[in-house]
Image (cartoon, rainbow, N blue to C red; front, side, top):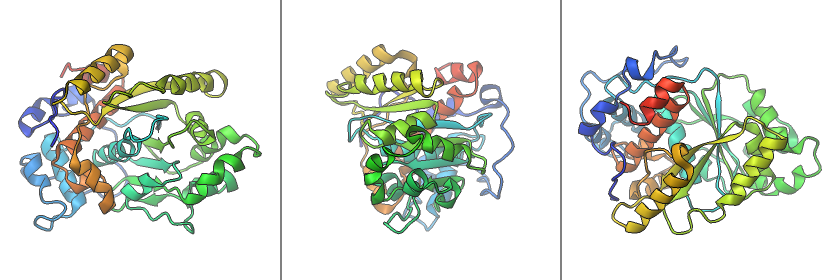
Amino acid sequence: MAVFETTKTVSVEESEPLRSDANIAGPTADPVPGPRSEQPDAPGGAVDVARAAPGGNGLPASRAAQLAVAAMHRTGGALPRPQETRTMIVANQKGGVGKTTTTVNLAASLALHGARVLVVDLDPQGNASTALGIDHHADIPSIYDVLVEGRPLSEVVQPVMDVEGLFCAPATIDLAGAEIELVSLVARESRLQRAISKYEQPLDYVFIDCPPSLGLLTVNALVAGTEVVIPIQCEYYALEGLGQLLRNVELVRGHLNPELHVSTILLTMYDGRTRLASQVAEEVRSHFGKEVLRTNIPRSVRISEAPSYGQTVLTYDPGSSGALSYLEAAREIALRGTGSQHQEASEGKL
């Protein structure tokens, strides 16, 4: 298991100061519609609770994840919900940096905290759909039908069974041809934006998982949202090619979406045992400043194993270092979006 040096959330003992008290997180909005699981009578350690999933004493994975959240944040894991839907584009033209992993685990973390979250899988490989346990073979209604055929988004969205409040618009292999088919369509850059705006169910967050390219699918994502989340792998080539993504963000902001901005940089695959990882992290933080989350995501076998079971790491092994790191990263994101008071909290004034 990788050493997780730069964040505080590596043990239950250290998580006590990070709880979402009312004077930090503010009043919680009305609960998500629909029944939610009851809170534990006497929360124990997050690691002890979480070891019940996926194969311990028969406790369901989703229940174990909820108990882990409750044990980690003594108030039951509640975080302030945004006043309006936050649409976040997870993008990086480099492959293998953790875009899909970051998308599904941040989404699951926020849903476990009580938010309603939609994941839009915009990658033809459909890895986000796989990780969330969503069927996405060729005959399944998918985001391709929304973009190319004009089908309502509500007709393709499916609930994620393991996490209450989490939904997914899956991708199928048909999406591979969408880049070419979109070229001749009217308003080709804003078709996803219009589909999301017409979605009638209340949502707190929309996460869009982009393909590792800067084509029309990624442009559709950049037009549809306001916040760009960039996962950066703690390796030598971390910043190579990132300039082109940032230039594209500027172009889209200048011509199509003036509210677009890079709000979050997340360091992934961090291995504190190596000097290289520390050097990359230091360089990224010096270059991007406050956009970089304090939480790093460590290299973790559990994170890599979870998709093969059709799960996020939050339900596969809620007590692992990867799960706890994504929980804390999601908490930072939630607090950053709720005003200056919560911004200060997320920057360490806890």
